Image (cartoon, rainbow over all chains, first blue to last red; front, side, top):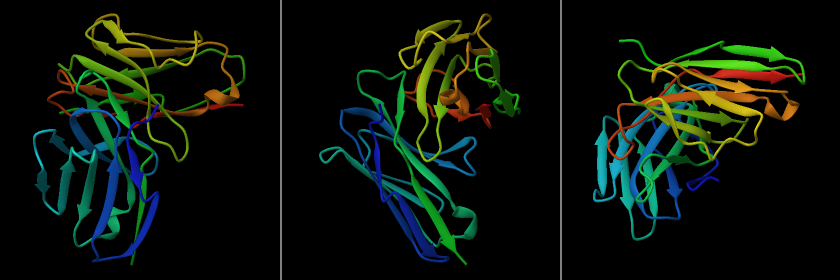
Length: 112
Length: 115
């Protein structure tokens, strides 16, 4: 089963614009993680945000977490062609911290 | 240092055959995970090892799937009597300890095609 649901499923924007992807989940979490995947192969970890955190930054990435709404967003500022990839949110449950559940992902395409 | 490696990178087999997929985690990582990913979907959890033992195998779809990690390092995912529906990318990931504190590090995956 997949807990996280990303929105939108696909997103195309012009290079230089900002890209925002959203994730909703169902159960109480210990942390939420965002991953990027190029060409359907290995995933790369981007950011981990804990349930007691509200916002986190890493370079051009900004992640927010609203536990009351059970939602998170990933913002990529000043997008580049190299940002074209699929982005997944994944949740680690409060009760099962040995398991991570991935959503279906958002396919981001940066137009030149 | 070396990341997670998986072999083979691609495997084509015929329906009914047996296959083994190998994962070499990052040295010292006690947690190891196997996932299966179909086109357009997120990774689907299969099995999780903490050390040598399978702590959670609830994601294995049926008894044709089995995984081992005999020495707490390398793991092998074994699929018996393969079916066309088993075609997917099989991903392995490792983590230093618990996901409560750490992210996962993924290998490049093995693309399995069952003809």
